[in-house]
Amino acid sequence: MVERKQISTIPLAEVLRHPLIRREDGLEQQNEVLLRLLCEAQSNVIQLSAKLREAESQVAVGKESMPGAWKGFSLSLRLSLILGKILGMRSPVARLIKEGNAARDSRQWAEAAKYYSQAVAANPRNGPIWVQLGNMRKDAGQFDLAAESYDQAIRRMPFNADPYVQLGHLRKLQGDSIGARRAFRMALERDGMNRNADTELKALR
Image (tube, rainbow, N blue to C red):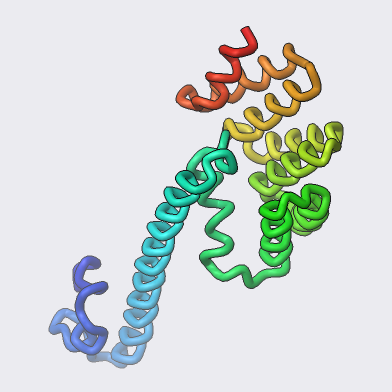
């Protein structure tokens, strides 16, 4: 049997000539198809790994150039928001998110909320976009709708600190210090290293 680590480095033609690859009993064509699929799968994994590294690099650049824009967002949420752009933006939902991102970057909060709302209507399981929708509604002064969006995000990402952090900011804007403290404590329960939640909670004491 050819070792898995060899598949990604040995040309397909050479793999198919390997003495341990059975070429009798009518299995030659079957082996070739299976090995080609395996090689293509491993190639896709390598390409995805490269794109993830590119995403991490873009996150680092984003943190330096727009530190305020990333405030309160974990690496996983930043990556989820960036990967759609890097991996193609081909689906209708992805295009809606792209339009929402453009409106957000132009500080058109209500317009961005419109696109994000359509995106989550098409894919309600997208927790990070529920957070973005909440942020846009919050910035547009639609506090009740923002709270509903964060609640939806929490339902879909119950162990993620980000929706709680953003909900805490919303409650703080509303003058609800008790609600803000509760939300920031919930965020720290999920991510004890969340500096944003920790700083905000200490400021509210």
